[in-house]
Length: 219
View 1: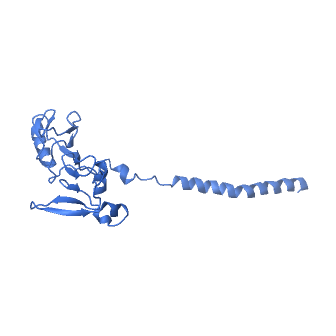
View 2: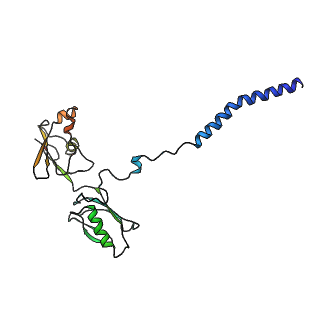
View 3: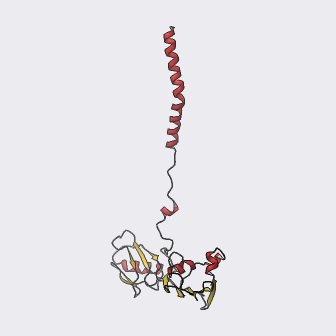
């Protein structure tokens, strides 16, 4: 074998030896890419329902005036819609006409809508969801800039309520605030709230989540 041929053979061997690790890396990387799992949808993306909404088939919440209702009739987009409860407590729906919504639960209203639609739709499947509970309110009274009633949406706390009411007026007794809560037996519970302590991180348990008909008094 000539020295020239041996030199060419040696060079070819060196090229193969140098390329082999790179080729192995490419093969490994391609295999890894083919096995990468698709990311799963997050819980927040998967759920489009607002946290404050009352789900369909609910037999506990009582619908009130100004509540926003999402009414869905399966496979009937022309009948399905989102509508507010009027000040007279009623809603109007295509084919079903006028219905009394205030005072009913979502489940009861579903049944009434389905009964009205049976004359036009075979076995109508109806879902009623309370998207905004505007009828459920709390009150802020006393030495605040905007006293009044506020819709109880998104589970507000006492601090949230004070902010909604525009903050304190001059000479408000920020250490002597209290919440009046209606009990089932008709009595009231008085819950103290010391604003200055809470904003400093003391007694955070006083910053309770408000319920419908709670009244915050700022002396």
